[in-house]
Amino acid sequence: MKFDLSGKKAVVTGASHGIGLAVVQALASVGAEVIGGARSASEALLTATPHAVEVDLATPDGPRTLVERALAEFGGIDILVNNVGNGVKLAQGFLDTDDDVWQRTFELNLFSAVRATRAALPSIIERKGSIINIGSVNSRIADPRLVHYSAAKAALTNLSKALSAEFSPLGVRVNTITPGPTRTRIWTKPEITTKLGLSEEEFIERNGLSTGTMIEPTEIAALVVLLTSGEVPSVTGSDYLIDAGMVKTL
Image (tube, rainbow, N blue to C red):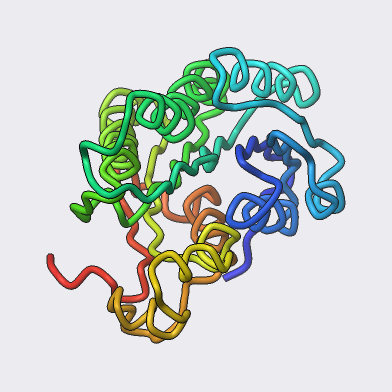
């Protein structure tokens, strides 16, 4: 199956590295014009698209600024990919997770998507476009060390469902993609496995990745292309798990 998104205008948040960068590259490779937002524009992002905006998406005005820039440059938005996120700060447990950690985690992982979606929706409704929220397998896993991050990502999944229920009758498709451990800077930096006292192989085994390897960012990007292509117009309100077999329950 070949995809052609020529003429489509896309906004991707958290676009400098990892999943966001792979999404920008994948959408651009099938003809879409893409504006990527991040706190700093990496060389790879500037190579992937001439439309890069340096913006702090964890601030109240950041997402709106990015969307307004896209509307000014493109004249409209067909695709919004809310990818920005982080806050994977391991704690000893709930009592070691203070208000600042909770606030920062929700600003980046939930409110950035709320604000970007609010700003982009009028244009996306007009053009009958698509919204993809990039979640996390942690939304389905109760881990006291990541209670703040898991809660924010679970809320993001619920947001997708609510948006789909309200706006799919107007022609807007809203879906979530939920990756497991992905080969990005978060999971490959030595501090993670060192803090856990594990090698990468032990980390994969401990987390039950059935494939025996981490997910590649290009896998998430490929699904973004499919879901935004219009080839599967009946898919909305869905949550696509890409977890290398990590979640074993239905």
